[in-house]
Length: 350
Ligand code: ADP
Ligand code: MG
Image 1 (cartoon, rainbow, N blue to C red):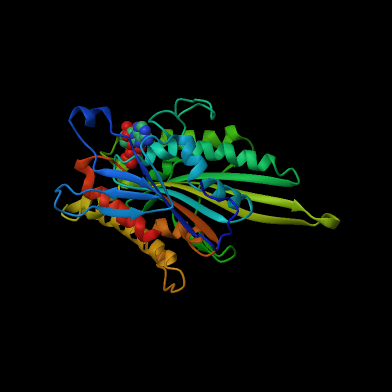
Image 2: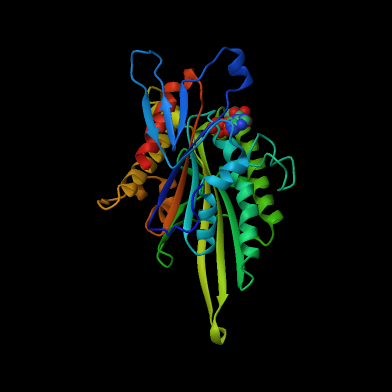
């Protein structure tokens, strides 16, 4: 597992890989795997032709197909992000990978679970709900502080920001602006919900996912083309001697990215081409920002401004934040080339 006591400068970006199990359907088609997990955070990718050498990649942690949702909470390092959010840092956990690799499953569990109104403690919940539970645990351990939580939930589709808590915004996309006072990017007129309890936070997730499902219905393969970003802001007021109150402002973002296979759809035409370029742009700029940051000392210009997504993640990608990348991959042979693309993207970030 990963330590929860590291400071922000030590490890700005943590990269883990999650391999989903082979599905029943794949198994019945006779699909096999070409992946092997020798331990030590390694993934070995055998080639389709035995004459070619296997590729070896290494990460902070690799979650094999048997890993549970609880394992992801415990060993991905997300608990450290939650502690840092409580302490006033900006943090982001995002899932990257091709469509069908398990991004949404990792973040929000099987389809319909959250929207079914299940309890936040129901088995099967993904990382987001488990993180909510942990966040309230952390807060209850700090009775000397007063906390104010605010949540928002948006979608970026084709470089347009849609408020998932205010579906009317689909017709009139929101603007991303720069705030001089807080020296950060923000979404103008984004709906923000005060959350006093775990149930309040859970209700935000549920509402946003319901709205997204409704919006997605009208558009084919919508979910593989858009990014969703759920943000929980954590304000902490600490009473010091003589009644002085000192406040910290942290946050944690949970991001379910568009399918990484979209980065290559450059042969499409018309609207799809514009879409592909925009998705391409966000994912490419994100990859570029992350590679720059993990490059340690020789930090050049980091192009946050080049996409909506990276603008909104800038503070957690920058010096004062911590980012967790969960690279999701399918185990099967037919997905090998996308799997290798994802493993490369993730290795570049490490
Ligand atoms: P993505 O969001 O990357 O497109 P999904 O999360 O929708 O992928 O996963 C594709 C399918 O595989 C879904 O039916 C999902 O429930 C299933 N799945 C993904 N990961 C797992 C897992 N770890 N265990 C069981 N089923 C999974
Ligand atoms: Mg998905």
